[in-house]
Structure formats: C-alpha cells, structure tokens
Image: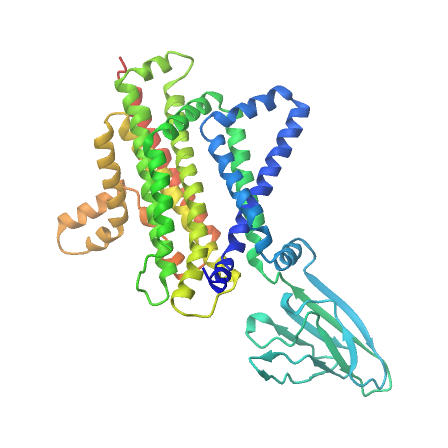
Length: 496
C-alpha cells in the first residue's frame, strides 16, 4: 500500500474516533455511577454487576469496550487540535462583544481581535462617529481578493454573516482590523460577533456519549421498577443471543456492510448514497428476522412445550409474561441496531474516501465523512421503531401460530405495510373492490412508509426532531394495539 493511499484512508478515521470516544466517555460514566452505587449501596452494586450476564448489558458492555478500544488506537491519527477546539466552543461562550477606542487622526490603527476567523458565524461593527475600517484580504485560489473598506457612521452598523455565502473578511489564525479616524476626537468602535465551532461535526462525541448513557440509565431503571417483567425480558434476550440466527445475522450483516464499501453501484460518484440506502434496509431486515425468530422460540415453542405453564405457575401473570416478552424482543432489536448501526456508520465514512479515490476526485476532508455519517442516525432510529412495531405484531401472532406461519405473516405485513400508500392511491379508481381493499389495508395494517426516509437520508436532507417524535408516537400506539391483541389471544389460550 502506497503512503498516499494510506493517508487517504486516514481522512475517514476522525468520525469513527468521535463515536468511539463517545462510547469511552459513556463507559467511564457508567463505571463512575457504579462506583458511587457501590459506596452507597454495596448490595445493589453487586446486583448491577451480575446484570452483565442477563443478555443485554453484557453485549452492550462489549460494544462500548470495542468502540473505546478503536478510539484509543486511532488517537494518534486524528487532528486532536481541530476537534478539541470545536468541542471547547460547544460548551464555552459563543458571543463576543468588545469596544475599542480609535485614536484621533489614527491611520490604519491595528486592532487585534481574540477571534479565530474559522469560528466567526457573524460579526457586526458599530461606531459613534464616522470611521473607516479595513479587514484582512483573504486569498481564494492564487488570487488576492479585494475586500472593500467599511465606512461606518454613527447610525449605520455593518454586518457580515457566514450564511450569506459572502467571502469571509478575515484570513489567518487570528482576526485583525485596521481603523482610520480622520477626526480630531477619539471614536468608539464596538465589535460584536457570534461564534460557532469550526467543526460542528465534533458534536458526534457528546451525542454518542449521551445516547449510550441514556440507554444504560433507562435499562437500569427498567430492571429496578417492573422486576418480574424485567426478569422475563432478560430471559428472552438471553435466549435470543444464544440462538444461532443472532450470531449469523450479526456476522452476515457486518460482512455485507464492509463489502458495500468496494461494491460498484455505477452511480457516477454517488455510491455512498446507495450504501446508506442498502445498509439501512439490510439492518432492518436482519433485525426483523432475529425478532420474529425469537418471538416464535420464546412464545410459540414455550406454549407448545408447556414451558409457559411452568413459568406462569410462579407469581407471574399473563399480562406480565406478554409485556416481558415484548420488552425482550425490543432489547434484542436494539442490540442488533447498535452493533450493525456502528458498522454502517464506519463503512459510510470509509465509503466517502473510497469513492473519491476511485473517481479520481479531490480528497475529501474528515468533516465530509462525518456529515455523511450523521445522516445515517435518523434512518437507524426510524428503522428501529419499525422493527419494534413489527415485534409486537410477531408476538401477537406467536401466541397462536408457530414459527413458519409467523415468518410468513410478519414479512407479508412488512411488504403490504410499505405498499399501503400505493394501494390507497389506487383506490381512487372506478373499481369498488380496489377502493375497498385499499381502505381496509390502510385501516388495519401499519403504514410503514412513515418509517422509510431513505430518500431523505440518501439526499442528505435533515430530518426534523418533530418527525421522529411523531413516528415514535405512531409506533408506540400501534404496538400498544398489537399488544392488546396479544393479551386477548394469550389470555384465553389453554396452556395445558
């Protein structure tokens, strides 16, 4: 491998490093919380340590450890200065306000501003008397671009905003002004600026840490409050991980996602978009396969083998049994998405560099890789919500039917759920039967197109938080209805 080829691949490492460092911070936060718990309540801390073998916490800990190890290994290869300054700007004051006195008859009085030009989002100059201000003249390409002097008056402030796309008035590591005062009196010059991180993509690190900490905290609370439901969920999750289909899904998914890096899509430089689309669909299908398989094994096989009768002979009600099974399926789906989603983000970052190399383009910078990687996150969230919804449907089916019918029904619902909008559109035709079938499917089946935003992810269109919230509400409501059906079907089921 040539040094040039190796250096190109280094461009893709900072976004992966940010995810890994977020996982490392989350792991340190979890260890700190456990240490405080051990000091206050040793028995509860011992129980928390034993939860590593319950099926969910153990794989999550290994995932955090693996990501943290990658981050530590990549640390010498990433631009720590750029990332560190951006992280500092994320938590520090973002407003700059300073008043400078320009001396009488001053000619090009130099004013040093404690600002980095790359962090200036907007800047406003105001004076209490006529004043001429010269900014630095930035270089574009090989030509010196003339930036006109700014003539200020007492009532006319001057403002530059980066969003307008106008050439930045500053060059170098520190912003500098030169003021000319033709009057015999001193003039007060006020400089106000709005600062932003030079690389806002560095926010991947705190967001990753927050997500992992939220998952760990929510799971700890879940184990403490509904203990019986949590015990059933833990058993279900452990059974799922012990099934060969779980390991096969993870291995096949990881291998295919890595293979997507070198697969040519013949899209004239847009292969990274196809990778994101194919990767999201692959993870969703594999997670759905694992969930349906687990639902059949954890419910249908237990009913047929009369294991459920033994479990329900203990102080455990049938609703608790069903809710525990559903929680276990949701945890299994979450594990699949966390593991394969991390692989998809890494391959997305690497694909940006690979496309530039194969297309003989100018090498991208690491923030380009990070931007492409960030767009994958909303797709993963919505795909997870869709999988959890279908897990509730699979659970309801498994209370009465075995594995093969469950697989057929769930994947039929998956296919028709994505076709419901087309069927409804076709119902405007003159055929009454088409109109009736379309309205029936639209009423009964889930509209899974709500969770399909591959077009937005591929196109780099930002997905608003409100859309994610409404999709989560829809998934929660439909899952609740499916669980009610599961409870009704299971309540009257003869387990003997």
